Length: 335
Ligand code: NDP
Image (cartoon, rainbow, N blue to C red):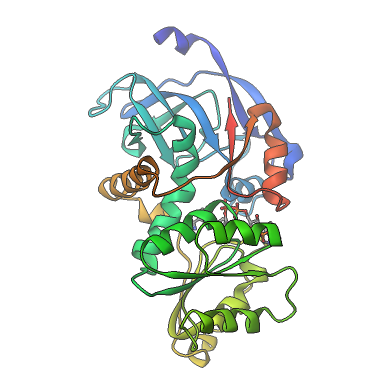
């Protein structure tokens, strides 16, 4: 539809670094795909914490910029030299900047095909958090039969997927979450032990007891921590000797500088601070990871909980829910 190229479309723009008040839906020209790019009509865009870090300037960005790093839609126009993708193809993506919009141009190499059985909105909901949970359990700190893992914020977007993926690989989960209701969600995803960390005076003790009940009296094999500042110490204390702390986010704030000797004192511990971008940088790896996640969704093995679906004009409300800890699972924006 080349006529689309002459019209305008809505895009969610961060006008300057700041709070949700800096978000604005602006009418912009439909972008033209450059060489190696495709123009996609966006069906749905994902709401992610990285958008918050970018908006606030934790990850510095030149303003104004179009927000969004995740979505799914239909290919409409190919730029020069694009192969292997055709107009009409249903595709999804993650970690490609500026796609919370009616239309977006993306590098053809950043697209993952969406299986027929999966709705575009479900695919949009599964990509970024799904591939994150996937790299955490497969490549970052691999889970095997009998592994015991600590998962914080287990009723959240990444959290619910992570619990399911650990359990699917034969692991056991000690989950934390911010209310009894959220703990029930984590249990419904397969967590064997849950702790409401907002109601717990001795979080380290509670985690140790839960781990012992799961057959890990010396501590958990791996702690997956996306909460950051508020949970980092408890995560470190939860590990068995030679255990792995995977700090993959800072929903409660960034972890302050850290004395490396604590890894020694804790029992020859490992600490890594990974990001999805480095686990999908190669085209083959992106395709493998994205297709495994979407295949698990298609087969019903992985359930993606879409907790809210907002028109783009109500984006501030969606981010208020994410930042205010009232969401469970995935939030979507629809153009
Ligand atoms: P969630 O849906 O998990 O939402 C964040 C959750 O964190 C909240 O629901 C809340 O759950 C918990 N939380 C604890 N303290 C706070 C606080 N002070 N403010 C807000 N939330 C808090 O979000 P996502 O699944 O999108 O992301 C989870 C984490 O994973 C984030 O830190 C994100 O940056 C990170 N991430 C990292 C990636 C990577 O590549 N490294 C990729 C994707 C996500 P509760 O009430 O139960 O405590």
